[in-house]
Length: 346
Image 1 (cartoon, rainbow, N blue to C red):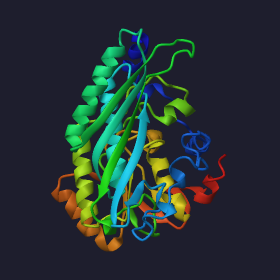
Image 2: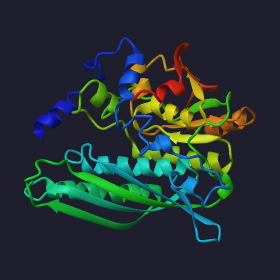
Image 3: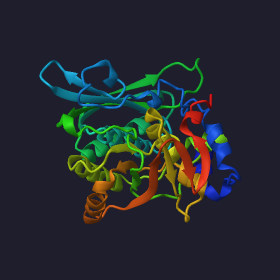
């Protein structure tokens, strides 16, 4: 493990060759089973959240459901993480909880409780109890930061070596309440021409990304850039924006980075996006890095001034990405075809 840590600490994005053709990267990553647009077990199959459809079959993928017939709604989500639990279990666990909280908030639900299951801890590994202790600290710290109640936590130690080395993994389940059905927000784009914004700062970071592991075959890299206080601020402002109904959709930047977050938002309604990258950040890092503390929203034109004023007043950084198109994908004035073409990557 010490050799792995040394490689991670010595990692720099300068060590990774910048691809000459971004389109090659996109179509290489589309066949990644974690990002595939035809992986119907993942987010591309999510149905849009509609207050009128809650309680029906269409809301199961969204994680929003109605309790009984009284109109009260709840949200549930399950998330797992194995990166760096051995080397930095506290930070890895904080990242997992932050991701889960951010994703639930993006739907318009309010996270309230969390449970955790830590497993594949080798009982013969002297570091096993340190992993458990660090994960416990990370869980409790993140829960306190995000106002969550920890309802349960379990750990399973592995006693057998016959299955070979299995990385420690933590799974969390999160429950939330829907306070106002009329303010539910989906992840999908709905309106051509709406402007797309990134809440949070673009970051020159590609640590532990699908891009590095799948495209460059580099796995021993640091955790993605993450500051829990920044994450707290971003999530708090999202609550305000949704409460004021200033955003039309909201998506946390997650697996596959910005590009695949936009693609997941565009595909359900056969829309596209036209964006401009940050000239101060390498294009591949800007598009495929998975740094934390970023949320993608689209805003109706008649609410843009109020949206910008709200972020400025709350002193939250944001980046204007571009706008929603009828179906074409354009990056820095270069066309990459249409989203229906992207679904044929596998």
